[in-house]
Length: 345
Image (cartoon, rainbow, N blue to C red):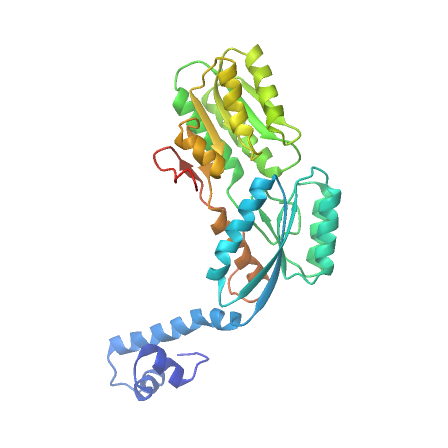
């Protein structure tokens, strides 16, 4: 058996004597098949544990760069900090760069600064625009791996994407809306954020494609939150409702603070009801609305799992962990009032 370990290491791992291990390794005979399997298992265990030994005492400085509303950024910080103890024996130090502005200028400045700051890797949520793609290419040339979070930059030099398959998420929302409405007539209000985030674009494409396939006669009416302001969403929703008495469903695909509550309030003030409201992300606000049954379902993914995976990808890209560097979309969870966490979640 080929292996890089001393006989004493294998003996300690297997619980067998060094003499027995020596007989197995050199195929001297007189050894039971079960004993051979124990030695083989011990070598396999040592192989897996080598990655932990390589990580012992190593420190990785990771920069988290997020352009998003403040409540999402706060969720990213909390999720990563909750995961850090589980990433040991490696030590992950994180620097957070949160921007809520719509422009790319400040974001580009942060990415260029990160490139000069000896970062071991970047976790990035940013719009898919040429300037950002170019900045990711500069980081890659400097040897800094970039992992995109929640929304992808597929034409960039990023190492991998972590998050849900956004197109599949949009299609899932359409499936739920149509199953709820069934044969009843009615139009659908689609609420989205501003900017060039590919994640929302893909959600919308998936939603529209599935609705075209399943509900040919339904109109999709859009409200865009251009300024990350709940009052603007409220006004836009009231305008749509005022001119369209057949709106019976809502799909909200973005994470603006107070936006979903604003939509609900607009319906109430107009004296209107909806049959189904599907939203994204199980933050505190949406959890409360779900438990109050003002939302029908929330499409959720485990942000902690995404960030743990992002850290693993960076360590793989730097040769500290084995295995190929690749994107693995996280599971889409459908949360209803019956499996929602407590409101204080």
